[in-house]
Image (tube, rainbow, N blue to C red; front, side):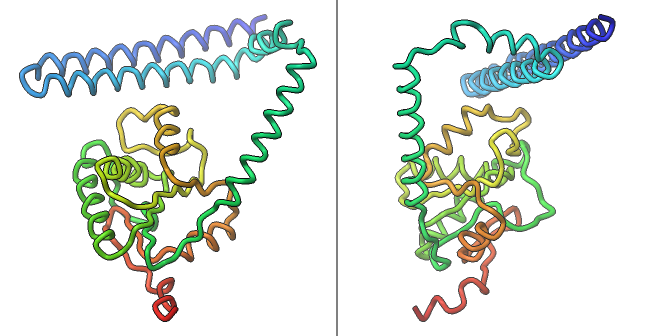
Amino acid sequence: ISCLTSHIHIFRLRTQKISIVVSKIAYVLRYIYIGNSNYHRKGLMTTMNKQIERLRFHMWRTRFFLRENFFPMSLAKDLESPELAEFTKEEVNELREMHELLEQEDEEYACSEPILVPQNTMYFGGGKSKKKVNCLNASRYRADIQQACTWALSHGINVFVVNCARPIGLLALETLLELRHAGETFQLYVDQITCIRHMKSYRLIRETDLEIIFMLSQCDYRFQRLTILERFDKIASKVGYRYNEDGIHIDECNLEGWGDE
C-alpha cells in the first residue's frame, strides 16, 4: 500500500509539473501574440494555436505513458471489459478477412518497390554535418532545399529520397510536398529507418504523430523494415546525389559506370 501511495504521489507531481509547463508556455505565446498584434496578427495567431494543440497532444501522450507504467492494472481492466472480450462468429470472420486483406495489400505494396537509378536520384538528409537545423534557422534551410530541388530538376534529377529521422530530412519532406502542391513534378520516396515517435524535429515543439503520418501518406513509396544490407543495396548504393546541411554532394562512386549504359 505504501508503494502504491508513493507511485500515486509521483504520478500526481509529474502531471502537475507538465500542466505548469504547458500553462507557462501558453502564457508566453499569448504574451508574444498581444505584443505583436500589429505585425502579422493572423499568421501568429494560427501558429500559436498549432503550438498549443501540439503541447496538448504531447501532454496527453506523456500522461498515457505514465499511466501505462505506474498503473498497468487500470489499463488491463479496460481491455478485459465484457464488451471487448466477447465476439460473435461474424465479427471473428470479419476480422480474419480484414487481416488477410491487409496481408495481401502489404505484399502488393512490397512488390511495387521502386528501383533507384543513381543518375536521377537525390537523397535528402544523408551524411554527417556539424551544422544543425533548428527552429531559428529553418527558413534559411527551407530556401536552400528549394534551390537544391530547382537545381536537381534542371539537371534531370527527378527522384527524391528523404530520411525523416533527421530534422533536415523532415524539413525537406515538408518543403518538397509544398513544391509538389505548387506544380513541380517528381517522385518522392521516404527512407523510414525509425518509427514515427523517434523521428527528430527541427521545431521547438515537435509535430504530432498524425501530422507526420499525413505527410508520409502523400509520398509515392516508403522504404521500411530494411536490414542494413538491404538498405545499402537498395538505397545507399543507388544514390548519385546527396543533400544535407552542408549543401549538395555528388557521389561519384555510385555514378561510375552508369553513364555508358
